[in-house]
Length: 353
Ligand code: SAM
Ligand code: DTB
Ligand code: SF4
Image 1 (cartoon, rainbow, N blue to C red):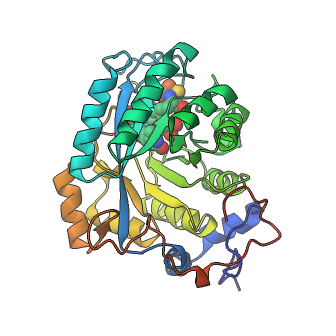
Image 2 (cartoon, rainbow, N blue to C red):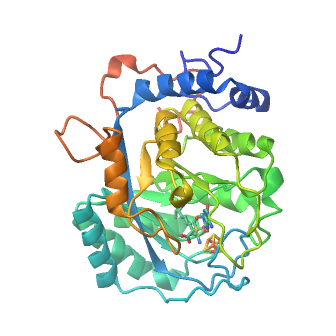
């Protein structure tokens, strides 16, 4: 009987096998959703969603060759490149995001990695956005340990750096940085004491085994990422992945559900790709355990649903926004500690529990 693969008694695990993860994906849809809902309700307020707004602080002309990305200099996507923004323009955008209801502001740069000469400006952005009362997140490419430390010291809360896919499929999408490079950056971020935001993309032509392996890699990190963005490929004209057969929408929901079961305390973010999803599909994603979205009419360079459309959807679903409403919600987490289990023998004490 596969009813509770993963074990509800000690849900914080870092030792998932390939067979266990594939067995979760193979569950009948209703059984998988039941397990995901059970995990979700154990650790989170089930009707609350966290809103993050994205801003591209440096756009295009990236030297990397990520096959999905409109910002690579190697692909003719018609994107207008923009240099690193001025601090005050970033602060103005953050103020607008806060007024619209976002609690986290994520700044992204089309860099392979930041240059040390860019760090003072980026530190100023962190300090000033934080002073508005927003959580801060950045995604600037690979970081050296000293760079991660400087960002942490400036007060950066989260660093986003995705594994993107399985180690096996990775080489079909990116050649200019290795999987290990990404793991190293994540280690630098954890060492510096920042929270990690790390997930991937589906719908890139990967096999079901690659989707399972992406989640196994994420859950078996020394600490579960605090946020796990699940992106559905946004196909952009001119990128090598334009024309890929899209993922079956129900398999996308399964990706969210298995992420929720394997990383039950993390925020699972329904990320890129929402403009081509129906309200009903997004509702299934929330039921599968997604509890965060990107909010605002733009992601980095591509479209995201308009604020009014998202507000209407959340209203139809009776969902609250974290930080709004009656104040009963604490960081999206249910604060009844009696339901939390002590760390089991598989936990490495990496800060996940
Ligand atoms: N340049 C930095 C880096 O890649 O490390 C940060 C910005 S990069 C745009 C951040 C993430 O956005 C990528 O790792 C990828 O997962 C996601 N992404 C980029 N283009 C996408 C697309 N077309 N569809 C879905 N996700 C995408
Ligand atoms: C993540 O996992 N998804 C966001 C964020 N991290 C930076 C980015 C999505 C980008 C989609 C393509 C674009 O708008 O350029
Ligand atoms: Fe550059 Fe990041 Fe796009 Fe890759 S995903 S091409 S590193 S901006």
